[in-house]
Image (cartoon, rainbow, N blue to C red; front, top):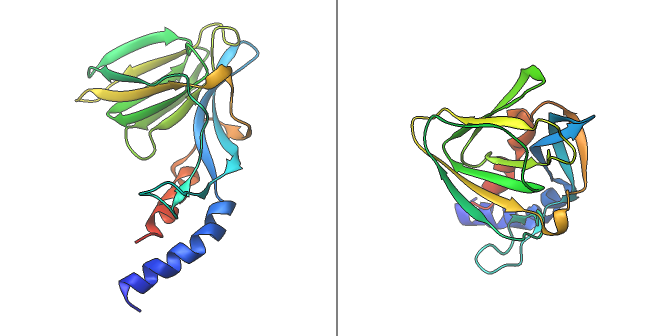
Amino acid sequence: MTKATKSHLALMLLPLAVTALRLNVTAIGARDGRSTLECWQLETPFSQSTQPGTAGTAALLLSEATNITYTAIPSNFDGGFHNAPFYQWVVFIAGLAHITLPEDNSTAVDIAGGEFGLIFAADIAAVSEHGHRTQYPGITETIALQIPTKDGKIPNRDVIHAGPCRVGEVAGLREIAGQGG
């Protein structure tokens, strides 16, 4: 079987795989006035893209956005304890973020920029008294996109478990991405 035939066959099977796949994402949530780290599974499954240039691939509309802020954070920067300013997606596209909670010294997460650099921040001041702490311990700057959701909406989701998502819970995206070629 040629590589082209394999690619064509994979794209024909993609709709079946896509409709079964839901995105798992680490979230900074809140419960009883305290920030939490949770692994969420979004209720909306991936669909097949119809956009020119990506038609036939897996796609997921995360939410409508009010704006997108590109942030360049120097290495070894300490953001201190803070609340999320809005319900927002944060995409770390380069660098490293280390997130901790003030009331829980045993729970932390390192988010590396790149394919697994997506989180949702939902610990706004109205639901979390102290927020979370974000430090950037990398040797280079960290680049992040901050994307508040339109109308302050939190995506529909199931909480898979307390604590951040583990690598195996998000790595399935590689399988879908690999089906095109």
